[in-house]
Image (cartoon, rainbow, N blue to C red; front, side, top):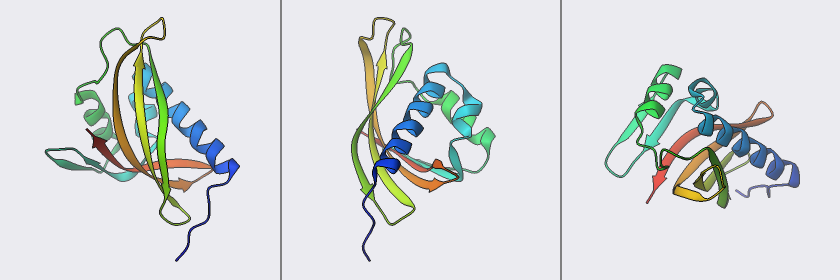
Length: 132
């Protein structure tokens, strides 16, 4: 079965989604973060996986996650490394997150792959896999 190529509107919607997600990450908006996932969401790490079934689970997971950034970061900047379509409604998106200070100098970074579902005019996170 073939997949449709991502069009310019989809690329713009993906950029908008990641920019909005970066904003809620950089401000620590736990409610905003939990609103961008499609429950249940699966988190996959090098040592364990977790299935989060409620907004409270998502907020607790983000709150408990060791930050890749240093304490002086004020912005989170996404860089799309790769996009792979997995059918019409699903995308694997590899994102490098750069944590910046007030002078825009990078203070840390990490990478994650997201399985995103197109829906309601935007995207929703279904799976987060940390990349080392």
